[in-house]
Length: 211
Length: 164
Image (cartoon, rainbow over all chains, first blue to last red; front, top):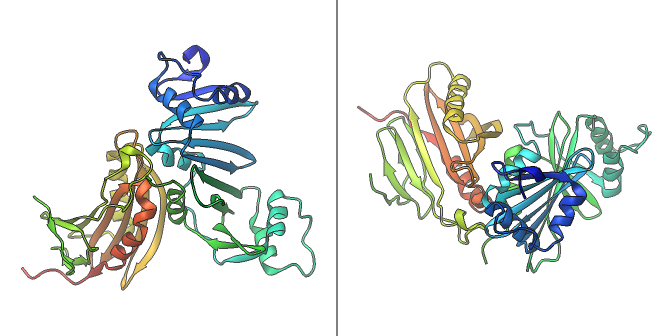
């Protein structure tokens, strides 16, 4: 890849249509040549044989990150069916995620809430309709908090060779007035007040340790 | 100044603040700070270049803090942001540590442009004296060290200035 292809060597970012980037990643790591930036080559190798794969959902878009012991590739969709493929050192991935999620000091929410999973999904999708009589307090509180400025994000981490079939998940809602982490609790979800520092620690726990 | 086993006893500095070191820590002292090299993670993180790095804790004395905690912390964070590479302030919130009140900040930075490092700091003021407990470690190690960090911060105490 070169500048003519949309590759910014200094930043390690290839900007191109998403379809082109996905086709590149599908070539199992053999798409790069000796002339390519070593960091970019390493990113393609990581995408082909990742030790860890993260999917990051935020504001209706899904980014994907593949990580191995040395390098990482982060694919981020942008507007107009375009995207960015970022070649990173594995140890720099948390920094990229902090930027992607726009993490910053936020107030934690005042109190925990417990809701049925389906109710949370409906509220987040913005299809809940007007408030109803008899609505649970937690539902009414979350409905009031989910202003257009509110942000919901979710990271799912899957490790190659992991004995646990379930992915590790970190999920949060920032309502603007307060922030929660989201955890499963049986058929419900538990929204617990969370600071960004606590979420940052949770994010650091999504990465596998050496074998 | 070379490192020596920290032992289990409470460690104080000239500013009158003290902490209890985690088991297995190593210690060195300077004129204005106590530095602790905390035990490493049992298993290194995924990334090769991040492995083996032990968290470094520093309890630093600010002998006089007449302007109050908020002004002092703001000034320190500004200076810090100019020294660090690509700093990103992630969190800043008021905390209570025993009888002390202060501020907990979490800053992320990239010292060599590649390795993500997290700096957790607890800023406290008592009777016009101030101190900051700073712990720095590779971000990929943060989850493994979090309980030890919280215990260290919770042990922070103001004992009054040392006698002349």
